[in-house]
Structure formats: structure tokens, C-alpha cells
Image 1 (cartoon, rainbow, N blue to C red):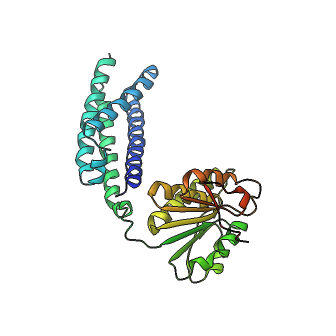
Image 2: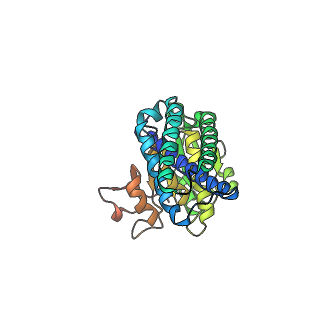
Image 3: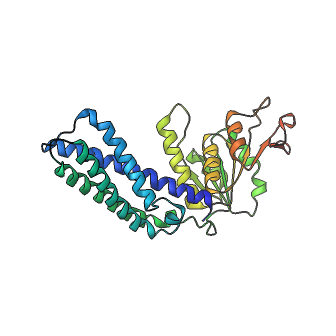
Length: 287
């Protein structure tokens, strides 16, 4: 497993566990309050900090998110249960020292029940989705993934199709009707996205990420804009070779997306000779 892929898997595991931890805490607060146990509002934030710190300590002691544990997936389950036991013990000690109206045994019971149930189902889901988490890039469903949004970006991508002759290429765009322009090739659609529509942008990120995980391409090539830039970013995280071709419309300087791609992509091309530099390659015009 390559280091960028391993880092991504470790980050996703830690992030989802942190979300679960907080959901369980607030559910414990809610149901405990419903049945008579009340926390002082002034102690809520210290309780949050304590629960984060105790989780951090317990997971580090048992190396729950370490490279070794995540790489050896079977060790995650043992580390999870050990971390949960130590975490609840540390948090219980904190409550014992700060709550003066009697030990909140009911809250500890409710919280423990929630956290055990939540993490149990979380690890079951990890087991169910393990094939998707297997970053075996030797098993590829596409050698080249070509991404472009509708309009001029797509037209420019089509102009380099002769380079794809007799290659295993999959296309991604944000308009289903474009499938007819690449007959004979696999084609997938992602939601249209821009900075003004945050919801669609999130949907587009998730779609591009899912397709890249599924296809496991060797190279990602794009002429822009938003879906292509997302593909470059995700490709960089997963250790895939990436190529950005800036639009011919950007005659005076690289586009904003191109400037971002300059920091992420393995190779950035411009279609204007005067924009070439040691980091930006000019090899002629597409149009």
C-alpha cells in the first residue's frame, strides 16, 4: 500500500471515529438529562475537551491510527476495544473528580452503551466495505481517466482523443448527453459543481472520489474545470500520475484552476508558448 493511500485511510478512520465519539457524547447528555441527570452548562466545554484528550491518549497508547495498525487491518478491532475501555475509564475518573452531587453512574452507563454500539457497527461497516478500501492499484479498471466539464473544456479533451487510440480510457463529465461523443469508451457522469453551489460541489467531490477508487487509473488527464481539478487533487492523494492541460482561452496567464493544479499535478501544459516556464510545458495548441 502506497504511503499517500495509507495516510488517506488513516485520516478517514480517525475523522469518522471522532464524529462518532461526539455523537455518542451528546446522545449520552440528552438521554441522561431526559431521565434526571443534568450536567452544569459551564462544565460542558471542559467535558468535551476531556473526552477528546482521553480519546487521543487511549488511541495513542494502543496505536489505533498508526500506520502499522491500519495496514494490518485485523489489528484495528483489538485496538478499538482497548481504546474504548481506557477512554471510558479516564472520562469516568474526570467525572468522579468534578461532579460533586454523586457519581453519574447512569450517564456513564448510557454513554458506554452508545459508544460500544456505535463503534461496533462502525467496524462492521469497515469489514463490509473493506474491498473498497483495498488500494490494490495493480488491479485496474482503467489505464487512463480523462475528465472535463461541459463546453470548451470537453471540446479540447475530444481534440486529443487520437492520443488515446487503442488505449483503455474512461471519460468523466458533468452532462449525460456527452456520452454520445465518446462512443466505444466507458463514460460516467458526475454532478455539475461550482463555488456558488456548495451542495453540488460536495456531491461532485464524493462522485469523483468514488469513481477514482473504483477505476484505479494509472493516469488522470484533464482540461478542466472543477471536476478535473478535483480529479487532480484526489489523484495526488492516491499517488496517481496526473496531467493538467490549461484551456486555450487563458492566453494571458494560467487559469485559477491551472495555478492550483500547478501545485498538485505531475505535469501542467499550456497552449501558449509565452506562458511556458520550467514548471509549465508548451507542446503546441489543441485547437
